[in-house]
Image (cartoon, rainbow, N blue to C red; front, side):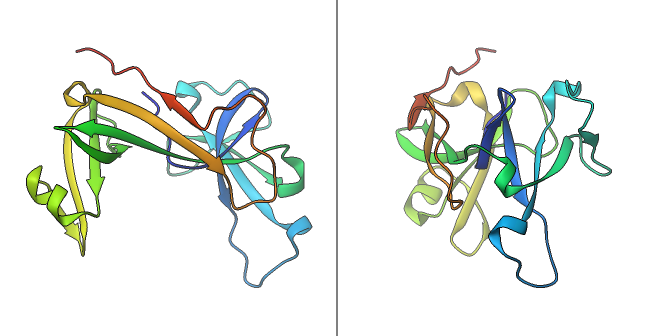
Length: 160
């Protein structure tokens, strides 16, 4: 399952993650380069994307002006009647995810580990969630949201 968190664009019909390329000094917006990327489920459909050296993703460097749209998204879930933020596990164990919160009461109630000051986390099977959804909004870039994209979309929880 592809759980999204971050800034995305719809590019050639795919929802791709946006990351700014680092520069030594500030540069004008029209000269800003960004990296768009996805794992494309292991097979990239585009010849102009390159496999990343360290991660299992395919990416392409473009100018911000090359993009038609952008949006910010966070994935949330309900676990034991509590709203939590949901992330994919970095090691990619099928069916497993991480839930997080900054609320100490929720963290303690759900027996989550404090991984940083006021940042609580717990790994669990996706089937343990009662509900899963994405919340989307305008991004920090001066680009419109993709046409037809809903600000809220409930996601199906896979059954194990």
